[in-house]
Length: 277
Image (cartoon, rainbow, N blue to C red; front, side, top):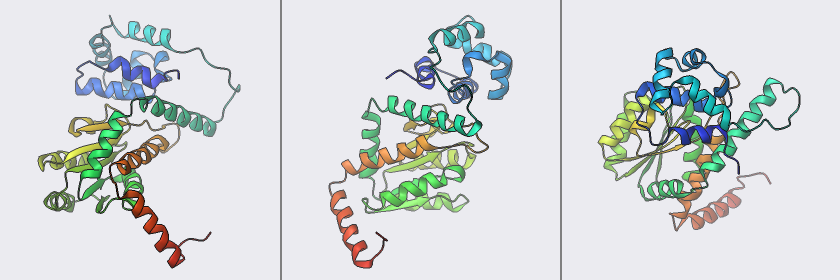
């Protein structure tokens, strides 16, 4: 499988100690991976919300003489454009971008060990708190809905406010050892604060985020990236959703009773006439 532009960028950044501003630039580049080789330093600075000198310093931190050298490198490693329809409308472009995000996720999953490690951590936590606020609330809800079919105690945390810390306290007191978090842009400050507090309680934080350079990275013990699409008015999140389902599969592998629970649910559902066939 040919590496996607986003994958090549992630590889370029690996091993470099980046400042928060530089991580912001890196995050922006990953999100706009297909466009970056053709952006000026001024354009990239505007997209990332930083100064133009910050972009130059970022390029130097990666080992290049300056931003022009970084851009030349990106153009050299960019694959030749494949034959494609002459014109795609904005909706088709959004679909193509999501397909690219899924290809990137597939390449990341070539090494299954991070997902397997995360699945084991989640399976072992009793209870298992699942956090997602604002844009990520639906991802947390979907994960918690299915997780509850195989895990004995799942606690959904999809509303913020002063009681969020109380719920984390209660989960920790009840024996929780891990926290599952979904974090998507725009990243609420409250999520960073909640993860910081969760770590202070001794919870191991597993996070699905849109990038390895997302603001939640510094307060996550295990971060699994899945890019979002940015071509429409609201972000599209097919890759984070699919990664959540992959994590559920890995978690089931750590729950010996998972299959029995699913079969028992099917029996009860049939007795209640729960679903229309």
